[in-house]
Length: 234
Length: 234
DNA sequence: CTTCTGTCGATTGTTGAACAGGCGAGGCAA
DNA sequence: TTGCCTCGCCTGTTCAACAATCGACAGAAG
Image (tube, rainbow over all chains, first blue to last red; front, side, top):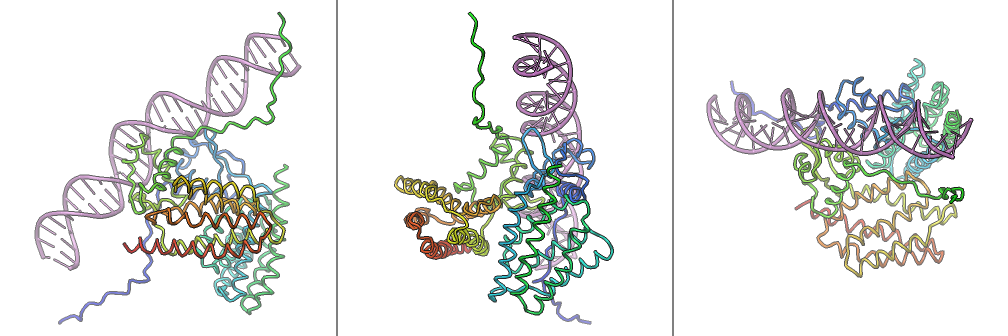
C-alpha cells in the first residue's frame, strides 16, 4: 500500500492567526465598551486605582489602556490630572462632518466617474443587519450596523488610511450619540434612508444616490449638533 | 512710609504655562528624533531593556513611549515580539499620496472657490526658512521647513482633524525620506518649486498654482516610490 | 466678609525588582 | 529533511514604594 505523493494545501489565502489579546488590550476594550454603553458618561474622570481594582489588572496595565484610548480620542489626558471621557463639542461635530463629506461624497464621486466601485452586496448586508436590529429593538446593534454601512461606502477608495481615519471618526461620533436620551429616534429614521440609498446604488443610479446622500448628511449633522448643544448647555 | 495701594498686573494676555513634559513623552521625543536622524533605521528592533538603559528610564516608561510612537505609525508592534521601526512599502507611499492629494488639492479648490484663504505670508515664511537651510546645507531643516510649507496649505481647510491627520501623514513620509542616501537631491529640487508656488498664490494666480501643484505631487511621489522600491528590494 | 496662603490627603508619575510565558535558535533523533 | 526538546532572551504583567502635583479646605490677614 503506497500512498500517493502528499500534496500540500493551498496556503495563499489562509488567514494569519492573530495573536491573543493582551491584558492591556482587553482592558481598553472593556473601557471602550463601557463608554459606548453610556456607563462612563462624557466628563467622567477615570482614576487609575479604581479601574485597576475593577478590572483586576495592575495600574501600569490600566495606564497602557488609557494611552490607547487617548490616541483614539475617546479619552482626554492631562498630566497629573488623569484621564476623563471626552466631551464632543459642536465644533467637533462640524469638523467630523467636514471629513465625512470629504470621504463619503468622495467615494460616490469616484464611483460616478467609474474609477471605483461601490459593493452593493456588502452594503445590502449592512442594511439588512440594521433592519433586523430595528425589529428586535436592539438599538446599539442598529448603530453598529449603520456605522458599517458608511464604512462600506468609504471602502470604495480602496485606501487603508482613509478607512482607518474614517473608522476613528465614527468611533468619535458615538460619543455624540450618547447625547441622545433615546437612540431609537436617532438611528431608526436613517435605516429606511440607508435602504433607499442601497437600492439606488444597486440599480446604478449613482448620481441620484449622491444627491440624496448630501441631504442625509445634512440632516444627521443637524440632529447631532442640536443634541450635543443641548447636553453641553445642561 | 505707607506703600501705595498694590495694583495687580494685567494677567489677561499672559500665555498659559504648559505642563512639563513627562518622562514618557521625552522618551518618545528622543526615539522619534533618532528615527528621523536615521540612527534607528526601518526594520531595527528596539528592545525595551536596551532603551531603558540608554535613556535611563524604567521599562514601563519605555513601554508608554512605545505605545505613543506606535499610534503615530512610526513603530510596528507585535505581541511578545516587541517593536521595530516601521518599513514604508510602495503601497504605503501610494496611499499617503492619495490622501495628500485629497487634502492639499482640496485646499486649493476651496481657495479657488473663495471659500477659504491661503495665507501667503505664512507660506512665504516657510519657503524662506527652507531657502536659508539650503544655503547652509542643513538638509534636515530643509525637510522640516518643507513639511511646514505643506501643512500651511492644508490649514486652509480650518479643520483641526484634517491638520492632525495630515501631520501624521507627513511624519510617516519622513520614514520614506530615510530611503534616500542624499536628502540633498530630494529636498533641494523642491524648494524652488515651493517658491514658485508661493509667488503664484501671493499674486492670486490660484488656478495656475493648482496646476503646477498637481505635477509637483506626481514628481515627488515618483521619486519616493522609486527610492522605497530600491531600498525594499535590497 | 473677602482674599490670600499654608497645609494635607488623594492621585498621578516613575521606579526597580520579580516572575510567568511566548518566541526563536540550536541540537538531536527518527 | 521533519519533528521534538531544551534553553536563553525578551516581553507581559504585577506589586510596592516614593516623589511630584493637584485640589480642597481651613485659618490668617486685611
